[in-house]
Length: 213
Ligand SMILES: Nc1nc2c(ncn2[C@@H]2O[C@H](COP(=O)(O)OP(=O)(O)OP(=O)(O)O)[C@@H](O)[C@H]2O)c(=O)[nH]1
Ligand SMILES: [Zn+2]
Image 1 (spheres, helix red, strand yellow):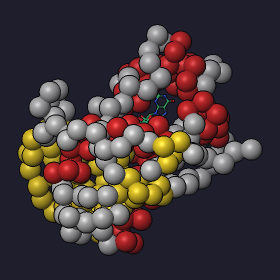
Image 2 (cartoon, rainbow, N blue to C red):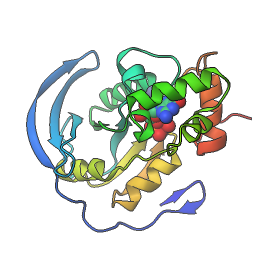
Image 3 (cartoon, protein in one colour):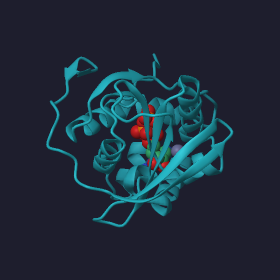
Image 4 (tube, helix red, strand yellow):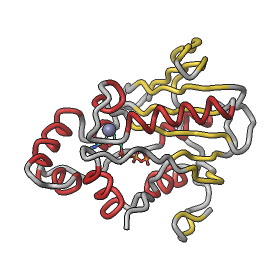
């Protein structure tokens, strides 16, 4: 497949194993999902899959691989677009009647952790952008690994994916781990005075498809 005009690598080696921990029903404001918890055997981190419908053996399944963001997902922070993106992705999947949210724990702050993200926010309050702030702390801009997301989708039997994202880098990382992405579904969120600089930096410095001029 092609991302922003560039070809992504063909499917890589099979994804490594992940341990299934538990499954149950989860009623939400977007209707019922099955919640599956998986544990990464290497670091013990528990990741989540919210599944609507029967996705086993299916092609073109709607999928959102969502990176944990406590401030945005739980507290409704308006500094970032995470909470709204998660909500919109769940709504899209509910409307389609089928799909998966893979919720990646341990991805907080693009991998630097919650405390460091808040340190980076403090630097952004002094004028740095989201990339400069990580670098000023001596931390990488994005350390997220999506191998476990691909393993979880493999466990669920998903064949090919329509990925809900604006981030071409995420598509590339998932494809490198062997995920077969057939289409990108944009997830457009509201622009506010609180998030506009962050969204602009995501487009200009991180390559997100966000349509700023
Ligand atoms: N270090 C840092 N992390 C942030 C900041 N704002 C949000 N995050 C984290 O960024 C992660 C989400 O990444 P984004 O780049 O917003 O979006 P994405 O998931 O890569 O791309 P989309 O699929 O389009 O949403 C979450 O883990 C957030 O905690 C910030 O200013 N600094
Ligand atoms: Zn966020």
